[in-house]
Image (cartoon, rainbow, N blue to C red):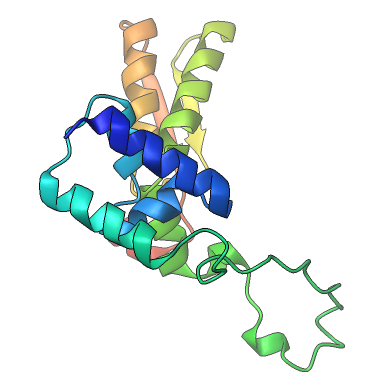
Amino acid sequence: MDAQQILTEIAAYCRATSMAESTFGRLAVNDGKLAGRLRFGGRVTGATVARIRAFIAENPPGSGLLIAPVEPPAPSRPASEDPNAERNFRFFDNRQKYLMFVNTCSEKWVVAERVSMELANIHPRPPALRLFDAGVGDGTVLSRVMRSLHHRYPSVPTYIVGKEISLEDVRL
């Protein structure tokens, strides 16, 4: 089966249903990166093609089965007026949701790359280059920045201080 042909069918279906390709992949074959992999030369088995075509046949465009219209959020009230204030939380206050977010996107890599670009603008002075990380987390960003720092200034001593609000992250 030609991957380009099935990718064309997926793209047409997604346009007709206003569905993201990642959503299509997740719903059809439980693989949100299906279209991206096919676009960059990935192969597809006959069984997967059959599952994709069966999904398209079972959910024709216009059936309205999959995508519900997004309603605008209701205006928020101050917490003191909200009777459900104890149930409200910020996204980053929920540890599991936050960890799932940062570990499934390129945010850490992008932040480390941006910090590494800024290293070109600093001029270390004795006794050492001092670096402070206000949210070490699992250390991914800090380790990438340290690698870039050593690459740019291999003979400059480095003094690094990090803090973390979560005792669990520090323990790990």
